[in-house]
Image (cartoon, rainbow, N blue to C red; front, side, top):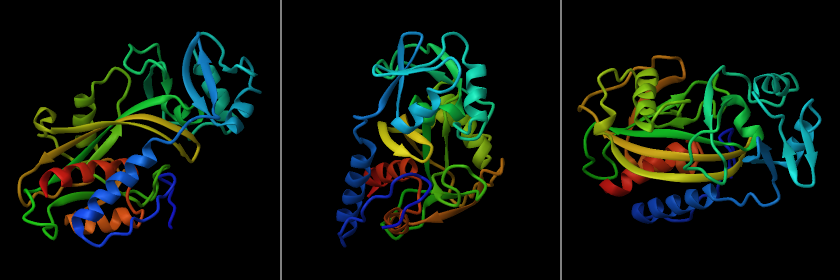
Length: 279
């Protein structure tokens, strides 16, 4: 079983028939998205539960000025967390640094209004909830599982997470103040050059609530999946350097790459959802 920077790998399902493989992969990924966070340390800010993190992260974060680790959990300093974020970064407790803010919502009230904003690089170490969009693109509806119609992008080797793995047509975090469709339009333009893409025409597939360990902490995320039919013969062009190149592959080849753990897990789920509707 191979592992990757995208997170924990999963055991390759034993199935030979295309439909059986498709369903086996779907259920294997689904199971991997819903891992128990029991045993994690709750993280509080301003009286709100904002995350659950691994004990080893809580212990290190709890030693920073203003933080308090007790049997009840990890308490972050009240007020603006900008300077505390810098302290986490300087202590090597952030996932790099992006100067990109995301909305912060209570972990136990995920549909509530944001209670603040936080640097993106701090979310996994704190086990705070992010929201993301993923787009599966195709140039026409497939005739069968061997028809190369699905667009995949190979992530840059310089990416902090999942370097060199395959992704969908576009994917990314929903930034502070954005709606999912606004994020979808922005990411589609930034990563694939889809300047004329209308996200309203994208087909909504599903939203998954993800809880699983990842390198650098714990992933709590709402992942929204969409699909889009693009003009036949269209091939996107990488724009912002986050994607090396794009390929058009068949559903069969897509399953092969997912089975070999060569795709980002959330992108793989989006692609499987699209394929399940079409074949």
